[in-house]
Image (tube, rainbow, N blue to C red; front, top):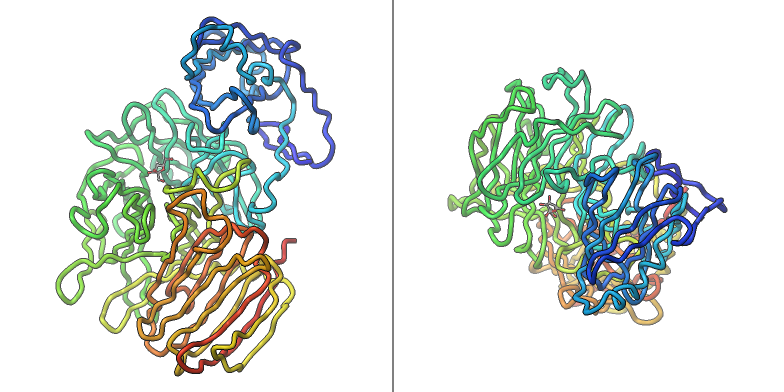
Length: 609
Ligand code: FRU
């Protein structure tokens, strides 16, 4: 059994544990004060107060009183008629102090007697441990990053330092739906194995901790120490404002700047993304002016005093919903000496296949102003980084080695992220990817996303090794080892379409079709398994293949509930969730309208060591 044994060091104990769960009567005193108000007083010892949750309930508002003062406010769907799962409230932070939870439940009640019947009151208990053993092995990804429990959305604040890739994420530690935003934290030395760390930044009086970014202050411009890790994030209280925090222990804990907020505006703005600009010798920051559908550009000498320089985006690109989670970086265009700037602009809803998605602009940035490239007719084209439905809030690591531009995205969609068929945890991140730039014949520059080179270490045994096979309408069939990487290339030749189908014995299937005339690849998950939890889930997503010769190479990463398709060295990418009733066990490849050639096919099992 896996247990978190301390919220501050996040040690994980494997094996039986000496749990000291006390009954409510033994360490927790419950006083009902009215139909909607109950005091939960901690009278015993324990690292965690275990709270029972019922997913379908509304949130109870809980003011946590520590020695009589409100230390924090959390929102929990306390169980009323049944407990779906429990969540731990970490008491170790308040050791030696009096802790009372002042709970306001949402349900309209007529009598206190009725309110006392809620099953949460009997279930609240003290414990030194909290069980985080995986209870979702059917759909929890085997090799993608997920939180141990609770809700996760945007990856953010990522930086690389001293050989470690730090990943923060929007995290609710008190339930598997969005609420109580903190910065969860994981780190990795190989971008595959993730160590779960304690929560890095928790809400304070200014509000919840929304997305942001980190950078290393190499020249101590902020005065918080040479090489301090600086975080900029959105404090989301009554309004949204931007806050500063610094860390002198490589991002494990952060000191929140008492002078916050450091940027305020008169309308909704969030997700600050900052970086040191070598050319100008000052800090740049991009902020999403969410409802105005534009990005704002700031400069600063010290990460604290910021000056608004310009804005970009009004009327350009996809304009529905809100603009969120920007990123801005410069990259060389493949095979040339030219460098271009890439402005990532996540938006929700209004994505290419509905809901959330990542669009980007290519252009120039002089340290103050971003100017987008136009097409032959003088328009700024709309470009998408990924042509699946489950790829959002993509941003990059700062301070990476070898000038890499490594990104990761949230592998879900706001349309149904809270409804997907998992409960202990919700959402995974995509595999890490390397952004590059390539120019097409029409002069347009596009961004590619290649699987990060570290992912080659995932390759286990080669279970299929096939080459030079003619493809026709009789499907060529191969066994699949469940989770796997499929590496496949074909030449469409005379074929009008080439189908690649993953299926299992009970008929769940995913069909990927190359259309030679349209030069597109589609991904059909309409019969992929469990699809009925949201009417927005069934989908056929379509990607342009950015080629002119019918030669396609694909790397497909199949995990328990996701498929990532990287085409032609990352020139087109599709990330889609799937919830098969049992793992896909068969791969079929066929061609219609004429013969095609399977140039090579390799299937690798996944090495989970
Ligand atoms: C994007 C987003 C961000 C915000 C965060 C809140 O998914 O809406 O704009 O900072 O989620 O969790």
